[in-house]
Amino acid sequence: MNSHATPFLKWVGGKRWLSTNFQFPILPSFQRYFEPFLGGGAIFFSVKPQVAILSDINQELINAYIQIKINVDQIIDQLLKHQNLHCKEHYYSIRNLICKDELESAVRFIYLNRTCWNGLYRVNRNGKFNVPIGTKKSVSFENGQLEAAAEALIFAEIRCSDFEDSIDMTDQGDFLFVDPPYTANHNFNGFLKYNESMFSWADQRRLQASVARAIGRGVQVAVTNADHESVRDLYKDIASYQQVWRASILAGKASTRRRTSEALFIANFEPCPKVFTS
Image 1 (cartoon, rainbow, N blue to C red):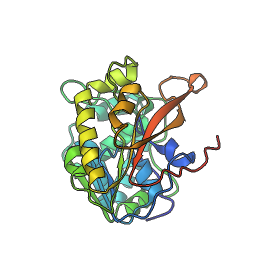
Image 2 (spheres, one colour):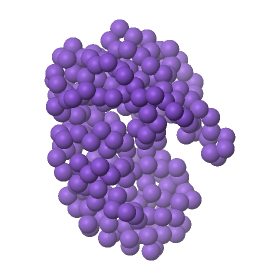
Image 3 (tube, rainbow, N blue to C red):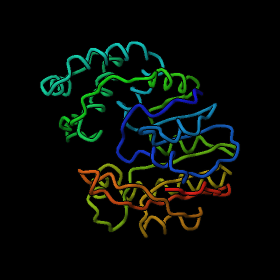
């Protein structure tokens, strides 16, 4: 994998901070890398596995990864055109666009991700993307970032599927990284409450059962989740727990963002985290 490959999408809940601030554990050797909640793919790009099975339930997201893998030059050309046209009117015309093919859909997805408010992915009840325009003006990528991402994805299998189907594919010798939408039982944090509509507490329990089966097969597992008592209780009998820290992404202004904790659960290998230095 290209050592310079980095996430090309901004994703709420993404783990770029975890991959770069020395809190993610040093991994033992493994045969295949699985990530069933792909999102921005920060850990995938950081770990640089030789064999990977990447999946997500979001069809538009998965299509963007597939098109980056197979049509990166065309995507770069199209994003340059959007760069020249970008303005408020252009943004909303593209947001309302009905795409004619998968390549156009991927370009639209990446353009909106680059220019919408805070990189948020949100759809209305009709499945239509409805995030307003943000303040970012840059659409195109520099320094070969998309080419590096395409190279990193060459040997990855990219699938649109439910997390349980992907996790059940894992076996002894594999590494499984799980980063679901954060929800907690009886938690009234606004972001967690919003996630509840996408990923319910019943989904959390189904996820835990899937992870427990994988652990039972000898799969090396790391799970990130909300650092809440209900979540810690969910994993306490199957994995070791440690607290990791990040800057809050919820506040509108960077100056008002505070450090907040998240939970990291590890099984079938020693945690051995790098020293947290900031």
